Length: 383
Image 1 (cartoon, one colour):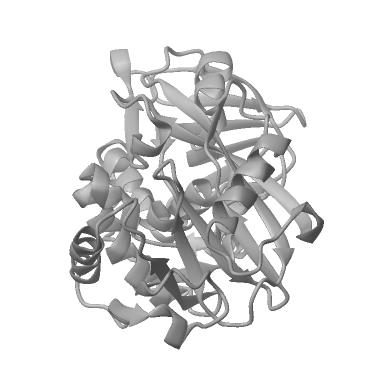
Image 2: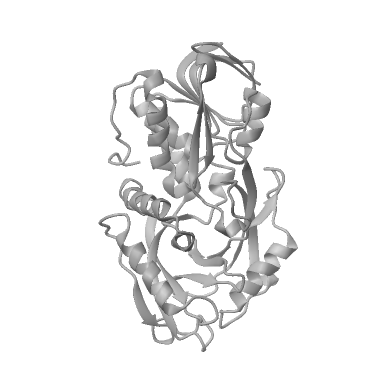
């Protein structure tokens, strides 16, 4: 069987799914292939949040926070069935960040990203508003809001809409070889299918450089750091519908989030790994998360309270920062069409919150190559 398409996407995570939806909606012929099931790798191993990245402000990533907050507002509108605003409580402790820094950061967070229906931040007395959650010495706190999301469902809804608009989705199938020509690619799948495409999009997340080197056979334009983020799910710790944003002694942030009525989601860690498949939590990470939250909780939790764990590998773009927590969560699109050969676009970095905007920028990058006439549309069409 030999198919032809305008765009062939490798990778069915949130970025690949978003690109497939956007491109199909512009009338392009799209094929997406994933080596597993769509949305079942990195995109389903997240902290389940659509957020601006409050802590990114400390690293002066203002543009990323602004874009993320704008996208938060859009995703709330187009995916209202799988998102909901959730209050987050930051307990203040003088040992870490001064109260004025938190207040200043929250003021920016409230006002970046444009008008929003999401509530603004406020200062509270913790023991009055949320008694019995935190230790008595935590009295002053700050409330802000972000969105909780069903991350895997977000991928699936994008895939479903892309199919309705004509995209072809191929699951549990690997790309095993490609041949590059002047105006098109020959792509060979491990089910013996052959596909011709004008453009290839490498949206494989932590596997981006493996695919670029071993399958596409080009030099990798960017270096990445593979960072494992692990989570634990425990029996419900408290009944209040509020999440906790806890500042650990190493200045990292740990989230404690009400999850699926009867549980609490706690994460995440940041452990650098060598391979993208190394995604299981270890004892050190479990102890790290338990110790971090027990600095704050009125009733400490233990390993006996854990009912499930999961880990995901995030591909962070290598930059000058040695500390993982300061490495940017931004994304980069690297287009390769050297010697006037058929183009490939490699996607580096990114996060669930910015997937829709990233998809628009991908289409902008290839618009001159594919000559389609269509404006941005995914910000107004509900999933």
